[in-house]
Amino acid sequence: MSSFDPNGESGQTTVLIEMRPLEPGELAALVTTPTVDGSDPLRGPSTFTAINDFRDGTRTDFRGPEPVTSPLSIGASRQPQPAWLTQAGWIFVAVILSVLVWMRLKKATASSRG
Image (tube, rainbow, N blue to C red; front, side):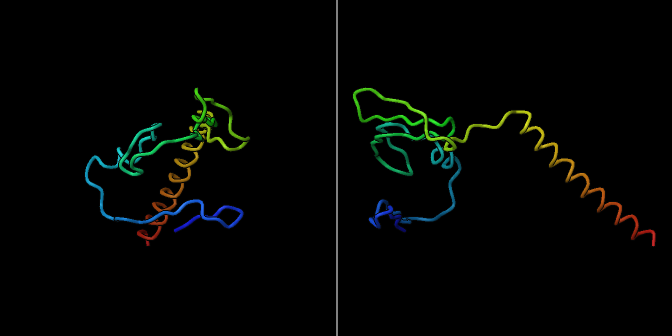
C-alpha cells in the first residue's frame, strides 16, 4: 500500500510482512512511544527529525543542534477532555444501559404473565 503527496509522488509505502497472533507481552512493546534515535520491534532502527505529539499538541524538531518544541496547528492536538465531561459520558452510558435492561426485564415479566 502506498500513500501519495498532493503532487502524486509516493511519500510512503507500507508492506505487510507477517500476520499472526501476538505472544503474551508483545503488545506492550508494539504500542510504546517511539524514542529518538532508537529502535523498536515495529519500525526497526530509525532516526526521527521531528515528533508530533498529538496528546499535548506539540511538535519537537531535532534537526538543529538542540531540540525545538513548538505548538501544532489549532485543532491538531488530542488533549484530554475535562474530567467532568468524561464522568458525564460514563454516567450517560450507564443510564442508557440501565433503561435498556429495565425495558427488557419489563417485557420479559409482561410476557411471562400471559
